[in-house]
Length: 288
Image 1 (tube, rainbow, N blue to C red):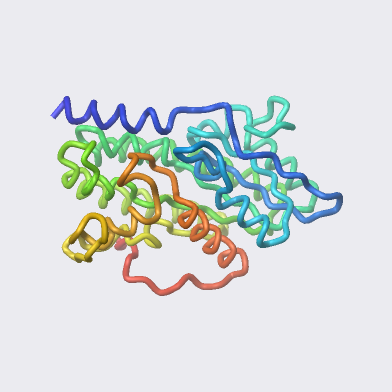
Image 2 (cartoon, one colour; image 1 turned 60 degrees about the vertical axis):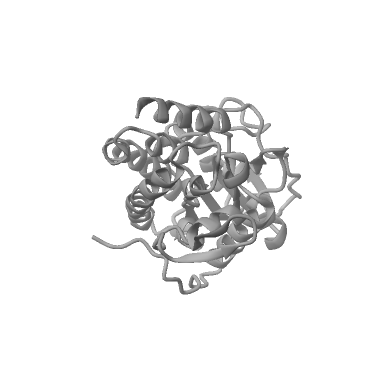
């Protein structure tokens, strides 16, 4: 069991290690309404071939907003409060500090926050006792998210805030030949993501923020007995096929979204920003 954990942990760590690079800077026109992006490599747009247009850039472009992207590759929820933002004008300020300063301008229409994957989803998915790992990590993650949201609401009580979850990339282990016992990892990940998303969705709700459940969007709560015919992998669980189309994990063991994945996230963020109800889905985390 220990060798299995170590092999997977190395695969994950290499792909999520903190990098000084961030999303390409965006020029904001004078007087333009703004969109502030806070988070990790999902927000910067990093992928196996480097940094390209991610969901934050798409949202800004399609909404006509100037993008202030503060996100950092490999960021944890604690990093939002303690590490310098990955933005040229940060000058030592953290993501939360700079976001709050930008909110004070009164020009911000939207804030998104995607965080938590580097806190517990990836570390705990490869732990010997994933659920015990998650339970101990939930408290700090929720506290850090609440601290950030408290700061945002103090300076901008009515700004639209959208929190995001992640696709359950570990479902892709089902078909990834580089990972030993991938089907077991995929099965373990379902409960881990359900619990994590339930907890952070409740935290965002306390602050009047909208929660976009990307796990549900990508079929992450579907039964692994629901099969589909995939052109590359043959008959596999439908939720596995969705993650393979949405991320690079099935082929490259890279947790990041494909261009189609970033577009789908952007579409969901834009809909949430407009107050549009999410499309009906049978893939929702069960309540307790």
